[in-house]
Length: 199
Image (tube, rainbow, N blue to C red; front, side, top):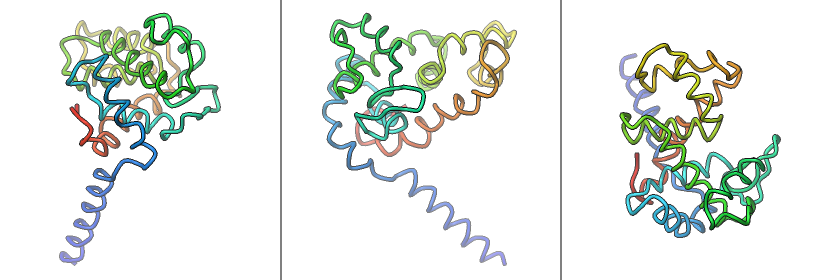
């Protein structure tokens, strides 16, 4: 019995490791050089390219023509209003073309950098990216309201996550919003580790 249990544990462990080290999909490889150049132009040479690659993977599965049921568009799944807003932040994005892969990648890394800058500076880079990703998925204003709802002067990221749904966001949106950074940073980022700096 003990031997069988050990064998099952080893198989599960191997399966988990295999899932974490799965190769990027073939469609991603065509974008690797462009995403790397774009991310480094905005974030610097230590840009967390694997995070951005994982984010595109999560958002659109690397489909430049993706359209979500709620109207999010392109590789990085920008809603039209957010695409219009981000176009005003960077002259290179003025055309506002979510279906253009080059535009979408630059818009995503610029928006992520903006959100990262709003995350508490006392957090680690990985925790700040967690906050940025929650903001990308569900709105940074909701995260900030939940930070206040903790009642703690300097809440940790975990405390804010625990307060999801206790302010302006409906609690029904919390499972998706909390899963989003986990899927990118923990589940998908390892697939793209060879692409650059990981968080």
